[in-house]
Each structure stands twice: as structure tokens, then as C-alpha cells.
Image (tube, rainbow, N blue to C red; front, side):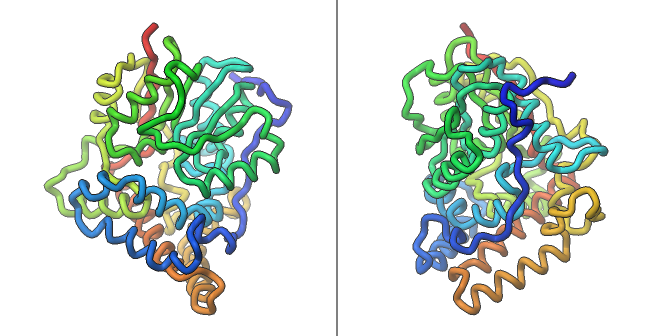
Length: 356
């Protein structure tokens, strides 16, 4: 069934842009990026997660300072995958994926909604337009908030979209502040799922819904399999993740936090097109449908690689940019391998309610 948007703008989704050189270091001084890149990579030298979970704020902030400009270049404003039918373009599926989650929130114009781990705010602008609710994006990365505020002003979404800089393990809002909460591929950055979900539970009003798309290891993951562990490690370093949880871990953590589970399913299983297809460099590229996705083909990757190498060599791009490009490529390869092996999903959907 087609739902009429609460806002006259049909969609807030935007195309990806060129690589923005002035933003390639995020909030870091351009002289610090080489050191920051090395420090970030050092967190992932060992498989053991404790060093990363113990320093998760530094891990995630370094990652997004270094990687956000590449994300905008590749994905536009919405940094997430999507359930996709064969007749959809990637951009169309991303919008529908956001609308599907929004439809589970049971919100109306004027309600207060929290987007946990909002990136630069692509989904929150879309969901605010779709529902008419006032959506606040929570993000602990100052650079992404700055970019999000710039985009809010540019798109005219500064009336019912705003941001708060905070850690989702310690949300600086009173109990029962929000009518609904959602997260899209963000709480996978949390060092402790129960602690994160408990904070979300606390700020949600009784009867309110928390809807989520979570990144998870599936029940096919075998921790004794060296290839599975290698893929897991590539996914962690390439995506700024301190650790990785299974779907069962996520469901158990939500229940421990106090939620009643309304729905749960791995949406990967019902999509026509594999979730990792947009980043599979060897996929068939169809320029007449998704011209902008050339950037993630094998040829597009090569163009980006040598462009970044040239820009760093001549001193236009900050030192460490090649390192960032390298670990992002490694992360994409890990996700593709994990998807093809069936050991990783980025679409474990849950809808949960805080009891009255």
C-alpha cells in the first residue's frame, strides 16, 4: 500500500557527490591524519576485542573522522544497505528501507523520535518528511553532526530535524523523552549491547516502539573456522566496529534491557537482490539504472585508489588517505565475502516495545 508523505517533498534522498577534499580529515588537523590512521589500524592487529571495546569511543570517532568523506562520495547522505527488489534502483530501495522502518514506529506529526547513531542525517530527514514527526539525531562524532546541520539547512529540514552530540551508552535526556526510537546499522558500534539497549529503553516512553536494523553474525558463523574469523576481522576494521554479535545475542540483549519483541526477522532472506551487491566489485554494472554506483565496481575502485594516491602524493589530500582507502576496501571485501558465505547480515530487523 502506498503511504502519502506528511511532507510535500516526496523524498529527501540525495545522490552521492564527488570526493570532498576539504572534509577528508573530518575534524582532525590534516597533519594528524597519518598518525590517526595508524592508531586506528593498530586497534585491529589482534582478533581479541577487549582493546577495541575498552576504547570504543576513540575507535569509532577516528573511523568516522577519517571515513565520512569517502562514505558521502560512495553513498550520498544515507550510509546503509537496503532490502531490494529486482525492479528497484539502489537509491529507491534505500528510501523504501527507511520508510519500512518508519512505518513500524507508529508515530504521527508532532511526535518526538530519536535516531540513534544518525550519521550525517540522511535517514532522519527522510523519516521526518515521511511521518511529520520531529526527529533528533544522536551522534558522538562532531564532524558528522556539523555535516548533518549543513545538510539540514541546505534541504530545508532544520525545522523538525536536529542533532545532539552524545554517546548512545549515556544519552543525555530524561527518562521517557521520546515517542519512538530507531537505529539503522549504528548500534553495532556499541561495546555492550545490553547497556546500549537499556539506555534506549530508558529514554523511550512506555508503549513506544524501538525499531532497528542490526549488523550481525548469523548462525552459520563458525568461530573455529580461520576463514570465517578472517572475514570477521576485515568487517571490523573496515567499518569501525569494536566487536561483532550474533542475531541471538542481539535478541537476548533487547529482552534483558526490558523490551517486548514485536517482530524479528533477517530481511536478507526475502530480498531479490543480495544486500552486498552494491559493493561487490565484480557485479554486473548497469549504467542505465544506477550510473552513480560505478564508484564501487572494480574499475571505479581503481579510479578512486589512484586518485587518492595522486592527491596524497602531491599533498592535496592529507597523509593517511591511502590507508583509509585501503581499510575501507578491506571492509567492503569482508562484507561481500561474509554475505556470500552467509555468515553475516546487515538487515537483522527487530521491532520492540517498552511495556506500559
